[in-house]
Length: 349
Image (cartoon, rainbow, N blue to C red; front, side):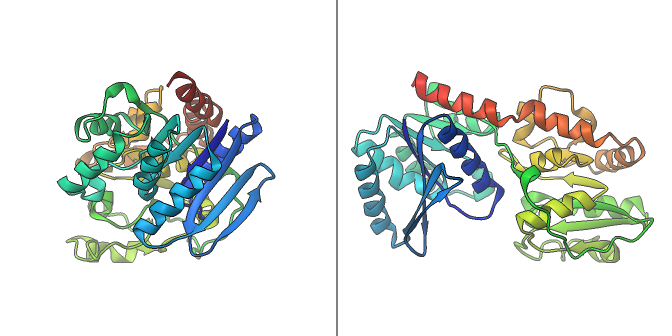
């Protein structure tokens, strides 16, 4: 089959995820191309298997025309689109009669503050698709209810991560002997709920705890938090780190805490698991839907400060092995299984 993936090609784990899927599909004998809008036109081959087509990004409706022409020329059997590619690609694929017109949908509306009008417009484009892939039960329910999609066309597939294969690049962090480093990766945003860890840090009253934040800053909401200045000597902010730097970040933390209020999936969780990190995660992570084992010992209510404090103490006192977390990743987020299920969706629709 000829398969086109419309997704942003960049240095991110999400981009790596789609590249990995495309590589597996190409290895199985399919003709696979990734199309991405950027500043200049270019074409190159990745790993001698996957063609990357970079198309010069233009104004919105010019992009609609460019993508329509490309799909018309390629005559694909399967088209997959996500994020900002969905509307133009789904429309073009519908008009051109592409048999498998697939949307890979990632984001809860609460995370993006979607207006009702945006949801309505997106639902109309979703109606044109043949299959919608979501990454959690919560997101699947939202797509069916809020976007009014038929349940039989909406399927769940998990993400995987390539973090284990990324070459490590050292971060600017010299650890002090005797200190316990608690890492919290992710952009600084109220929905990511980093203030909960700061409150826990304040109430634990242990100067040996160091909170290490890694992510871009959305606003000054943390600086304005009541306990931030009480704990500022125990807080380090490394800013946004590259994929290579994140590998070193994970390796240096004694504990990873992920306190988000809403995560449709939460790539950062499976990155931490694949890295073998001692991890505590909010019960609001969609990725937990795929874990078959009982993980109640490493999950917590992101609105319950006392529970988080207790779980932090337990995670450090009764530390699980690195292999325990690696096995959770291996047993529940296999790339082979994702590709198998993806091909099954195509064959059955």
